Amino acid sequence: MAEVPTFKLVLVGDGGTGKARSFPRLHLALPIDRRITTFVKRHLTGEFEKKYIATLGVEVHPLGFTTNLGQIQFDVWDTAGQEKFGGLRDGYYINGQCGIIMFDVTSRITYKNVPNWHRDLVRVCENIPIVLCGNKVDVKERKVKAKTITFHRKKNLQYYDISAKSNYNFEKPFLWLARKLVGNQTLDFVAAPALAPPEVQVDEAVLKQYQQEMEAASNMPLPDEDDADL
Image (cartoon, rainbow, N blue to C red; front, side, top):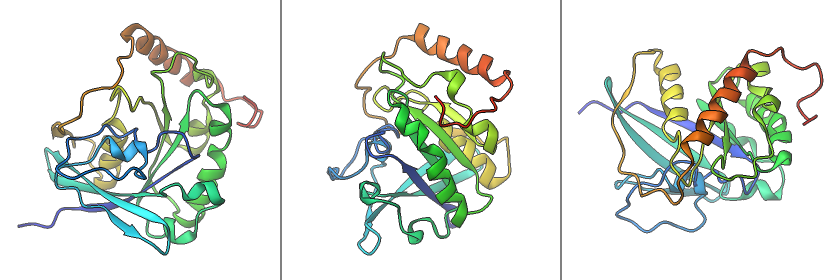
C-alpha cells in the first residue's frame, strides 16, 4: 500500500477563538478529550489517534481526506491551551508545512493579535501556505467586519469565514492547503467526512451578505493604517 502523503499543519490563534471546534466534528469511535480545541474536535475521523507531546504541551491530531488524487493527511498540531501562558515554543512550529491562523469575528482583540501569530509562525516556517480563518460567523453580534479584514491581502494568505458550530466552510481551509501542498489546483475532495450534526443553523441570507461584503472588500484599496486599527 502506498504511503499516504502527510503534512504537519500548525494551528494557532488566541485562546477562545474555537480553534478546535472549527473543524466540523466527525463521528468518533473513541471518546473526545475535553482539552482538544474546538476546531479540531469537530473534524476527527473514526480512526483518530491523538498523540500528546508532553515536552511541548501539544496534541497532534491526524485528519485524513479522500481526494481525486488519493488519500492525504494533515497532522494538526494543537496547542492544548498553551497559548494562554505566553508565546509558543519554537518546537511547536519546527517542520511545519502549512498553517491556519484563527480569530473570532465577535472579538476584535483576537483579530488584532493575528499579526503576532503570523510573525511567530513565519519566523520559524518561512514560505509555507497559510489560511486565515474568522470563526463564529453564526453569531449575530459580529464585531470584525469584512472591510476591516485586510491582513491576509497584505501577507498573501487565503481567508475564509467559517462557523464551527454550523459546519459552514469546514472543508475549505484544508482543500486550499492541500492544493498548494500538492501543487495541483485540480485536486478535490471526493468523499465527505462523516460530520456530526450542526449545533446551530446559520441564516443563508446572512451568509450571502457576508460573502458579498468580502468580495466588495477585496476590491477596495488596502488601508494605509496598521491592521491593529479596527
